[in-house]
Length: 306
Length: 306
Image 1 (cartoon, rainbow over the protein chains, first blue to last red):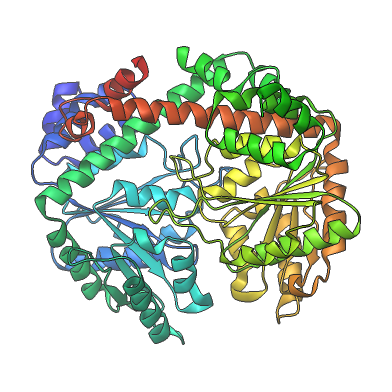
Image 2: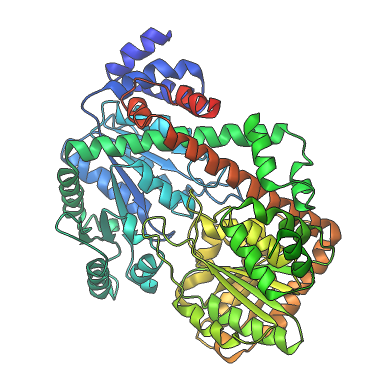
């Protein structure tokens, strides 16, 4: 596929052109630029929904249930499953996602896993062009799901139109989310496994906690919806809550979210370049700072001067 | 206090000189450099222990119990309580730390809270010079405690000699830590609130989980210790486990940890400068990337060129 071909076929919704463009973008190759530009220029773009929540909350099962519900509505869905994983293990926890393979062969569903992670523990900057390609391809919804660990939770909220926080009634998940400040990144909250004891209390606590925060007449209170993802229960109401948030954002709000995604991408690219530069500089630099022979500020200057 | 005075009095262990030096370092003032250099040149430096774990695990109570146990041994202790908090709320969860105030008036205990956070959600780069000052002051132990949210957990492990992970028997904390890859950053693990049901199982699971990972004859398996922080139980054994890890690290390992701290500081300083530069550039930059008018790579180049 020549580059002009790739753009034409991407615009026409050819899944092979999309797959090829993603591969180019993931590799950070310059040849991805024209198709990436085409994706960003597209006026009617997908609903970009981030799904976050602690491990074990059932994010993957809920994503799978949302795919099924969206397909029943005739919507085309792409899922980007990102696993920044532990910065220490470098592994990928993709087991739960295997269930999504049942959509394999449905041309209205596209699932891609990225095991990449950023140099700083969160999302890799290469996730963003992939997300932009999916957003500007012929999908109605793009769901970005991570394993929900550390920085990646915050990152997901920074790069999506809507952030869905998944909690469970078990272990005071809701209260922990509140304490940890994670709840504040949620636009919509699913109390999943709502057939377990304590679901009502969790819903009440989540609603009460939101009322405690600073708010005025423009504040969006994240709707709290009960779901039982394994049975597909409550998923319709959850999707409606996401669309309600989209209406609340409006065109202006969506433009701002897209600019925030671009900002995230540019910033992480800058950081990666600086880190690469740091590796090229004498390996003794940090030891000299540690011994008091060189100021940290002077070392930072040296790295930025290149 | 003139700068040479400050260095002399800092070296002599004057707590007012330390407090003044910290204020200068927190503000990022150049006048902090001489005293910071003096702190880093000091040969006998403190044990730097990071304390992490999910909210509600009892980190502050355990830190308080460790202070009491260390004071009983005649050791001088500094605590740096860092609350990077939510990048969204910007608030500080310091309530639990109020108990530490009971050590107020004991000249062998120094407690400082920092509500600062880094531009990227983790520890602020200004935390590091403060940590270096405490490490090079006349303390035997420096305990760095965070609220244990997101990136700050990973950061704590990156900047301390030893990382203590605090879990509880409740809610499958141990298994969650393992799933989330947090356990891998632990050098020592405390199963706190060990008088609650399930403590034995949690200890067994944590030990078993470590055996599953890749290891050879040099691998350090994090000792798992039962504690009941509110009664001071198990704290002696916990401190011994930290000292065992210190012996395992040896001089070379400690030098490497100090270089890692310096690296963290320099890298975060670089990132902050780049972000500042980005704010100075046209505010339209990111919107242009979002609309496909400018490549993200080109935007990153523009920011780095300054």
